Image 1 (cartoon, rainbow, N blue to C red):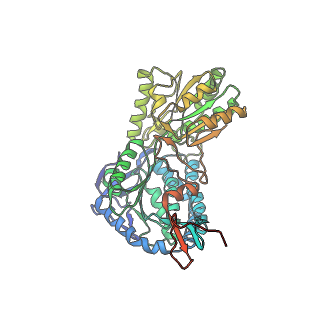
Image 2: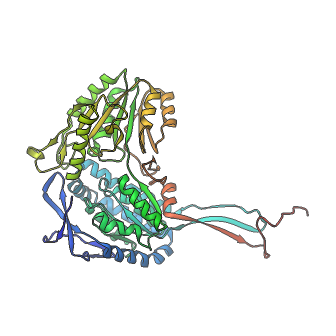
Image 3: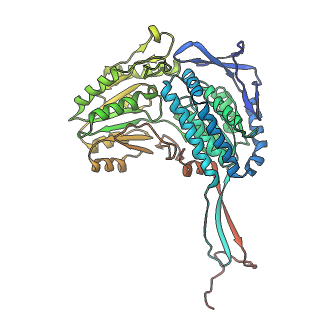
Length: 509
């Protein structure tokens, strides 16, 4: 975990408040180190406190009336410019993301690209932001509705997608006319700061976007209770999400939560096993398993169980673990020591408590190029029962549980048998099985013949049950519903008082 201490380095960053880069009120800083090599100091970032949050909220509050009054197409023009700046800086931002977060460079490029995609997609709404008209029940009266901004939005974002996820929240909020304060994860503040620097270069006015970095309790919690914050948008762990939700509810705020997952791939006896094995490796070990959509459970038909495990084992053994900046590396480090301890703890649970078979991996890598980083071998458990803890609880690391099943019905029952409902997948050549699973899996995202990862910005992202509170990100119809509110408008041009539900229409001439 990052430790707060006075800044003694020259490589320091600042909060962005009211259009200015400012030091934290306390003068305290947090170290940000490369998880692939902790000897490398990325920089020091403000350990913000309530005083910084108060200043950031005040700046957003002051900027709101003017930003709201800016025509939506003009707000969109700034987002288009922002998207182009991100394109120009993509490689620089990708390299810096890999250094601070650890994901391999091609995935970091994908993270920045998703921010680019979301920026252009949201900008397109600047000339839509659709409301609708509808007939009135009275003569000479028009009925319609329009969207209006929510107001001041607080955004608390995670470390695993440190530019993509902030963009999911920021861009729709901005095009709708809201102002915002964002608190990025303490492990990956640089990528969010880079996104905001691009927004600053695009000409987004002072106070519209504000950033305070720091720990959750010190900088995040005050945002969830501040009286001027109208909406809290949170992505992170289920445990923290409950706290955020409680704080928001107690203070009458809107709240959008995106939390955990325990996602399943179902592999049927008619599946293309080579394709299924390739997809499983990508879904389970891409981003080192540190995705809420990671494929952490594989339910395999008993008729192909042994054959599939052999193919998966061969592909997993070939993975190269190391520093994500190296071209040959396919799996990077996990984020920090706390993650190492948690993941190794679950591996021990799988072996000793659950009684599953540790088929592959299970160790921390500590020698040679791995000596100074947080590296864990891609790990596979076989002969896993659906009720085992490693098959029920989110591990958030490169640990995969393989569960046998007899048929599609049992696979679906196992797939739905967890508290989460984010993403699921089936590999089959049978269209009937595909559509049956598509209909019966109670998840927010579903894939056919693909892994459980790879969402695109123009479709809704989010899940059911303990994964969230019903909201979705991405897809403007979803995110606009978070960051805007409806206003119903009635225009009576009859020249007399008309009473809806009371006046009776008489069509006699």
